Amino acid sequence: MRGATRTCRSCGTINKPKWEFCARCGESLDAPAAPSTAASAPAAAEQDTDFFFPWRTVLTLAVAAGLIAASLAIRKAGPPTADVSLVLPTVPPADAPQAAQEAPADAGRDALNEGRRLLAAGDVAGAVEALAAAVSAMPSDPVAHAAYADALWEAGQKEASVDQHRQAAQLAPGEATYHVELARALNDTGQGAAAQQVLETVLNQRPDDPRVLQELGNIYLNGGAADRAVPLLRHALDMRKDDPKMMLQLGAALEKSGGRTEAIGLFENAVRQTPDSMMARTHLADALAKAGRKDEAMEVVRAGLQRTPDQPMLVRALGATLESLGRMQDAAQAYRDYVRLSPNAPDAKGLSDRAAWLEKRAGSGSSS
Image (tube, rainbow, N blue to C red):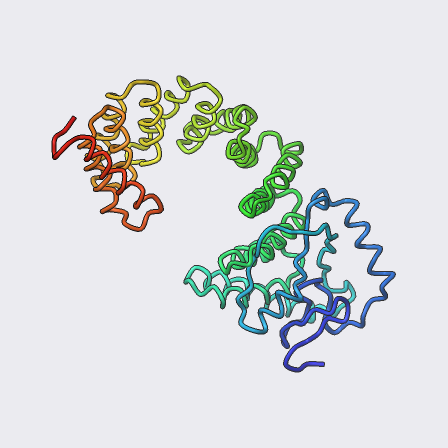
């Protein structure tokens, strides 16, 4: 029956009145409830073939749908806490009339396009509602699940977003992009080990995919395993030799694993290719300073500020370099300039205090 809501007879999820298929399980909302014994067999078969199952969690989209019905502020919310098998959404019955199959798909595509438009315009709640409808109409479309995941993430529902990324990856096992997005979401919700497992599994199948190599290398690097990151990032750079971002990532891994000389060379190359890049210059200046080449570090920062004056992070790097050279008063001034440019930065208060301490050390207005 159609009314204010439609309850799925298969899983109990409350859906929007005009939806044709359930947002959680993908079953037709007009179909009779499936016997419990029939529902359990596909779930077990899915678990056997799904390499994500050791750590996956399904946010019961009954909760998500309830939030949609209330205010459509669905979002992912923290790492999963239980090991729950995921039943993939099913497509409409094969023997359904052609017109009945095409109508939900057309509505789903319209909802997908509208949801993307709303998300780009900053209407997160509207995007969540539209993309939930897209998933309901096209439960086997990984693009719809991935877009819905993005909207959920923006709305702060991180656990629900991880679940949607997982479904997109399961629906398109040959597309590395969906697995990379899933790994990022897992890692960003504190599930680094699960993110590694996703990417390691994909890498076994696609050993030369630079996206997978780069993402797994970064997860290793940020997790304190720089030695494991280096060969992956080096392999990725071999396939993208002129990618400055890849140079910076490999350089950072080399620095942490004892290869500072090679890292400096990579940072220098990145600066040559992207002379206005704040990240490239700050990486290079920091590496040079740590290697004892402080005057060179100073020149790198000053050259950057000549190209892009008042760039906050370069001003901060200038302060750090000046301080390492013992020029306390000049460093204090650079830190104060940084605070002026970025008054709401997390480190603004700390650097303001440090500037006062450096000025005290330097004496009344004198430079070291």
